[in-house]
Image 1 (cartoon, rainbow, N blue to C red):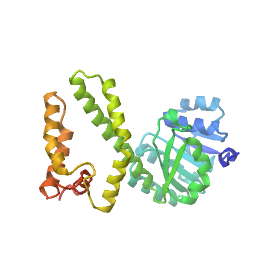
Image 2: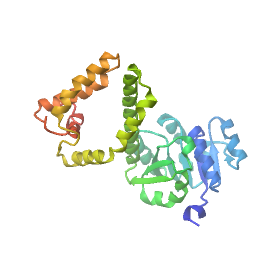
Image 3: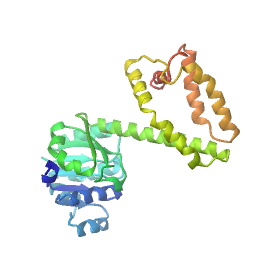
Image 4: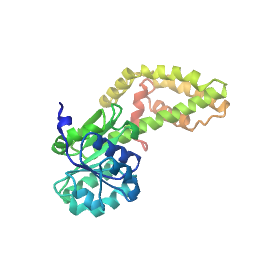
Length: 296
């Protein structure tokens, strides 16, 4: 039997939206005495039927368990709840799984320390139905001893539970960066599907070509990351001079089909600027120098 199987730490969950309910349900299913609270008390009824204890107030809920998990809509909601529970938190580990900025996470960590609590910030890269399964992917940062103390309990939430580091803001950095990759990829993909659709090509016919292309990207992405760290930019995806020549055709093709080209024009402007600065032989990864210094 694993440490996670043996661990039955009482847990409080503040916030019972779709994700908060999934978190509380998973704790219950793994044998943790679970106290719940939500502004709309009716959201707790199903969990109470499964064995959860419904607290009368957020401070009562926070006082009920050594591990307090907060998962609400946004930072404003976090602040409203924290304003009420400070006196109940000394000696507890507060885990905030609400998405927010690194600065907000660091401010919350300072606030928690002032109220005698250890603070872990977290990011959930999963949908509610993935919580408690191998598809659950959660990131944490904050005091290492606090994470290690509650690691067995937190691992129940997902198959991938990763501790990033002691800086409370780092989980938010990773979360925002990874979510950003998702949004950038999805919108680029939709632009591409609009293009092929304008040529009467079904999206499902074209999709396997895209998934096949991405399946071979691991080596290139690693090489680009290495180039970024080193500040040395070999032609990892071809020299920028070649990309500059291709961009006009890409933009013209989309324009001919009535597809938005704003994003491609932005990429072209980055390439053209870098080439004009004498870096036409550098690889695509060298655009990091322009992206990271927009005013130079």
